[in-house]
Length: 78
Image (cartoon, rainbow, N blue to C red; front, side):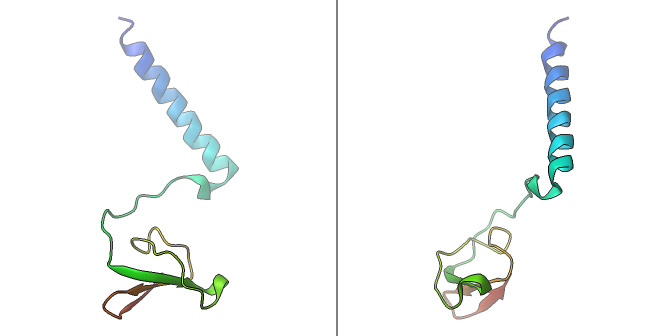
């Protein structure tokens, strides 16, 4: 009978954590990103000018207002 208690307690703690994160700042909650990587050569962002930055796999993992420069010459605006 005590086997169900830890599961119930874990669910309450998880729910409480989600509620607290939402109250502190909704942006703190993790987002789900697609599990694929583009063939990115480098990345540039408005905040860093023309500086070539280490690339992110896709726009979900890149900061906003950044551009992914693909190896084939195409650009992906994030």
